[in-house]
Length: 441
Image (cartoon, rainbow, N blue to C red; front, top):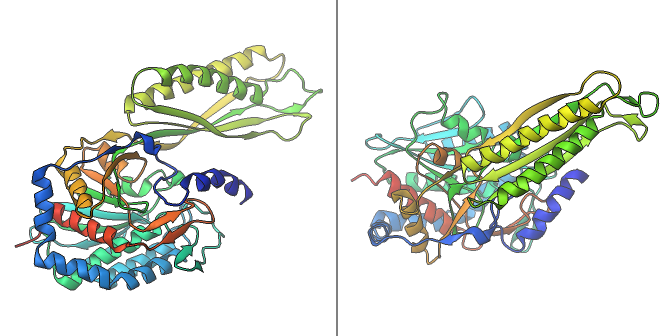
């Protein structure tokens, strides 16, 4: 837990008073404002002014106390990485009670609720992720300080689950029918170690079928629209040797020496690479370990590294430099040894998030911009590493939008949420869903 607190302390500081930036995202300085074309602005305005949609908007306001209760209930059900099942089971019960035509938990743990459309020719997804970053045993009991709620995971991304649920409740209560089928999803594995495994499964042969558009709800606030997927490769690299006494076995190949060389060579080459013209690319050696004592030659030395870019080619390029640095370091240390067997190295990919960029003129992105602007909010077009990465990388129209309200301390034990006009984000999610899935005549 101490290690986790150290890792999250900086994130807590940077998030400040409002949760607008995920741990997996680029800096706000890379964002650009979004403007919708007249056609899409009119489309959204016409849709929002339909009597059925006005009624739905009021229903969302009326449901706000229940939305908050659902939010708090789910927050207090732990959902550590790879251990989301208890929360998933409860969420499935809630979606079923809300009136979905069918609800199931798939082979990796995603909760999927299907609401059939009039034609069912297309399928649109509205999704929030079930998992949090917090390990098993973390106290997730909500603490109230005035109107502000404090609990690990309360904003990222439990708030989104409540939004998705309320949208389903709203269309059921108002009798709105869509042309397309809609899948209301609670996905597993969005956070770091999960490597987007839930949404990867949705787009696999084991998934629910062809998905035509994808709306992910993640983070809070109203202004950010993620339409660019920040791709990443992550590795755990382990040099292994015989190990032994620092004096008695002196001359054996030393895994720490090899690791140090690998870091040195990669950083030198990566620094040159990222300074070249092209899409922003980052690299980081995040964690290192190994060894038993000061007077022992270690039997292994390992590191975990991360590299990111919107460009698949840039990710591949800096990855190639890493692989070359590792092999060069291995060869040099083995050449230097005076006794014993050669070192070996294990290179294990532990994260692979594909990149992708959608043009802001794409109709689905234009609808997202127009739907956000309808609520007198200036859209901020953004890049992020979210569940939308997968559909974007596959050419499926997708965005990630916020779940409303204000929050801070993301990924920290002091995470908080304030329900400041949170209903507007639920209305926005409904409006975008109806614009994309179509309202049946």
